[in-house]
Length: 399
Image (cartoon, rainbow, N blue to C red; front, side, top):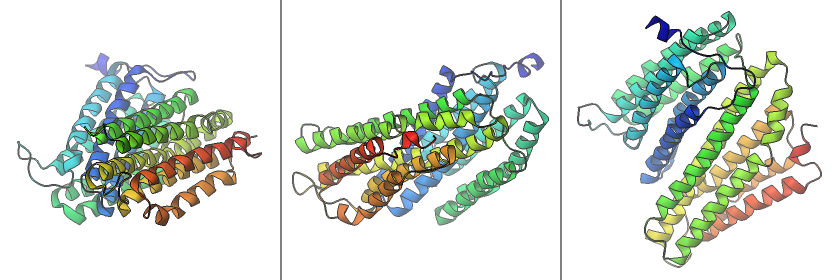
């Protein structure tokens, strides 16, 4: 056991993402699809808020392991074993996510919310133990101990919320998130995180983003069901694919190279803080936006299949319209924040796109579902075209 406990391999500055970490990302994105399924079961403001809360807990769990894999190789020794155990806990949490506010006991008599809360505690607890074991400097150990205090304190409202259920569960889980992540970020100001490999960290976030976009396509395809012979459903599926393409291009072609280059130029002493803000924080709205857009497209398909009075479907419900266009606005806001943090400036085009997406909501409620989705694709295409052709385009922002 002592030899196993001491077996790990520190990363180099040129370290890249391992296949083991991609495996971890697949479990994370499976949990993301389960959150979409949870919200799609009964899309309301309450379920969408709860879905966002679930994703907050999920995202910062994933982010913690991205930092760990930047310090030491994730596929070696004690780190691999501990991460596999965390993956198993995350997978178990994903399985029960659709029942995360239902208190009917499972076969062994354990309510699903408690299973989810305990799984989260295992994921975060394993991360803290492994990270402390492999810490290579007193400063990093101090950062981990400081961030661990609010992390452990957050377990109390998490478990209590899982036991009481209902609105109290929502409020207590929100409190747990504020204590864990908010407290950790506040204390990190006194002992900043250290980033060993820019290439690994940026690649890790690029990969999880593209996997999330790909998984949204799977959700869209599943939403079409067996109704693909109807022309409106086929067109909606193609529009969903086009949406995914533009979300991909808006990140990978328009901003990722510029932002990653800017992070590489930052002095080592500030690199960890910038990575925490620009990637751990700003990528949350990016992937949350993808999640909501996928939910909105599923609702378009549901309208066409089950509720459509005409060939282009009836109007979307307000929650569905907010998911579709609010999700796009959230994605664009994440892009703007990402650029602002890495390059220090944002051109007007991304901000205009956010405003137009939100301003279009009243109009979207009057349109047939298929037309609302087509309008979103056109808006994303126009956003990309403007940013690529404008004299002050984003690619020149860092200059």
